[in-house]
Length: 236
View 1: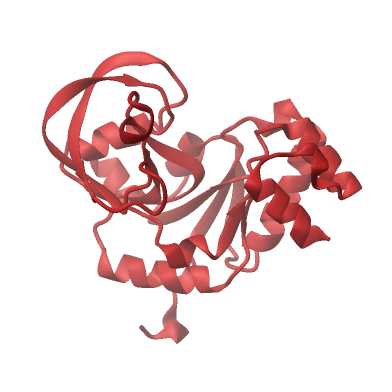
View 2: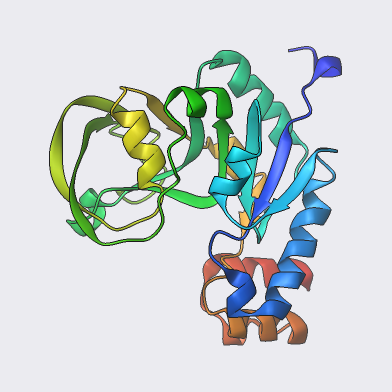
């Protein structure tokens, strides 16, 4: 790859998990920190409320991050460029979580913390909505997936649509994108280990009040989330 001709991708920061209404002070803090990290990677950065708004307002490839996702290494854009050059017709690069092997119920989640969307393919699929939290029994496309996982049983390297449908209880978000992609036999890759090492998501929607107090007081005894504790250690 010629690194002198790297693309400048659009980065969209969203509040898909409604942190603003959970704890406004925490939202302001994590939004500012997310912006600080992101503006080191691109001159095209915009803030939206939801993933659907971000995708609808974008062309080409857009990197979507929830507030609280901190990309701390410029190597991320190099890795992304390599991926896109090798997968020119991809639809989504994302954190895909296959919950059936882990919990014995549910379907797949396309986690909102970060995803890369090819909006041309999104439009070719009919501009599907992302799909928020729900609990609905419905027919969904069959899929195949890698035998390997990044960790536990629910983090496959990739998933791909297969023939036929099955009835599942759909719970987790991202089902709108997933249904559209998998019903057309599209493969969705999970972020590589190298990409994962470039960023940290601190789950500001989880125990938000305790997290904000921990940040202000630099005291991680109030929180239990591993990523949040890691961020507090970095602050110290």
